[in-house]
Length: 429
Image 1 (cartoon, rainbow, N blue to C red):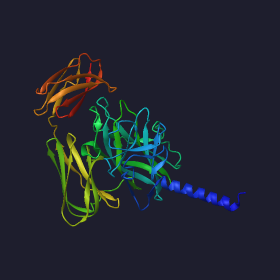
Image 2 (cartoon, rainbow, N blue to C red; image 1 turned 120 degrees about the vertical axis):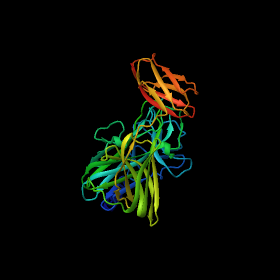
Image 3 (cartoon, one colour; image 1 turned 90 degrees about the vertical axis):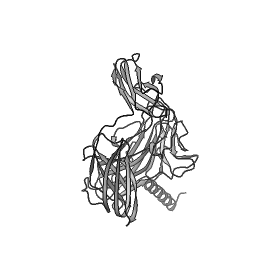
Image 4 (cartoon, one colour; image 1 turned 180 degrees about the horizontal axis):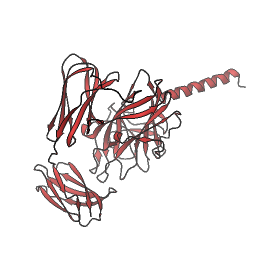
């Protein structure tokens, strides 16, 4: 016989269980806490763990797969099979959330669920993260990517996180992470090395009423050829109830902010006379002086009365006039902007010049002294290698005969004696 007390106890336990599950399954966007960070260092350091599709492993974080599986595996980039991974160096506590999509293991979407508890409508969301590449699959795989999407709803159960459908989701192209390396020999990479990671940021104009939910989605689709090992790390969010904020003086005393052209790079330098609660700087760049994107980050010095010097190198600067500014972020998540500076950069001589890029028979390849090409490969639009030839390394000029190729667009990949690759698009007519 079930007594009223027993029934009451069971109902109470069920309510507590549901409440606790909901608390774990979402991140509160609070009235007084306007910032959120996730570094994924709580992911497994070794072996495997259980992360079922649709379950929440970290507060607010869930994953959806198109093929049934329940594992997340610690990986250094050495594994080439599909799956959900906790990427990082061996035994290191510095982890990143990543995956390799495949036919057998399916496609992946990582979701972050948040709820607006500010008692006002959130109108702007600053999103940034580090994209990392931990593995190159093989030399026939092109540029692969993790795309970013978001959706807003008053019902937390209405989000369809599945990577198989984009219905109801809004994509933010500027928050796409593209693999830094492709069309080159398959191997493991150190995703924490500067060459293998990219800082991605964007401010999103949103409309999240009080009490409503927003889910952020990073999608790793199964792309052409075997997929590279890609991951996300150091996710950072700031929310505001006003869409536009007026730039205010930095809470640090900035006494210098300049830009210099150095060969093929732009070097930014700045100094502060004092700092108070300075967490970090985001370096932002613009082509028109109005719409900025984050290209890098430098750690601040917290609170100090000493002069501090900083420098950042834009390794892939724009040609022509570029605009730069600093976004200074406090330890409490608040931020403000520096004045905008500009610099003119002329087009630099390239290590490798390919011409003409539209041809019916031959292509000329010229390289600067010190660059010794050893191989030329041509890939079709499906990523299949259709042509390959060895080049004499001591020559600075080469002639490539592509008359045998069909009329189409192709990707020419040149490799030098040091393993560097140079990619150019060509059109055969």
